[in-house]
Image 1 (spheres, one colour):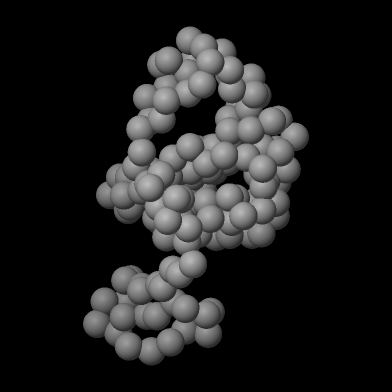
Image 2: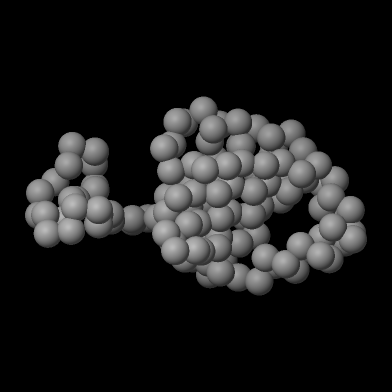
Length: 131
């Protein structure tokens, strides 16, 4: 195996499309939110959703969100689909959710597939939102 120039990503010589990546320093509290079922409170100000092409980037970004923003990460769904996508679901006041989504979009992460902010989702929507 050889190290790529981008930090802690290693390229597997035998399987060119498989990479190894060391993720360290993730809070134990955050790890407990991986694939956790979501139970919404009675009132959600704003809901943020970020979709990534791989699970590692989802975990790293959720850690960044917890460290850099007052929003609360509700769950990190990993291993979705054939390509092991990752999705982060978080809530907070509208300005904080919009701010952190804009910061993450501005980072230019190639793994970011989509991002959404749902302002004041109604109770019926949240009841039908199975995630």
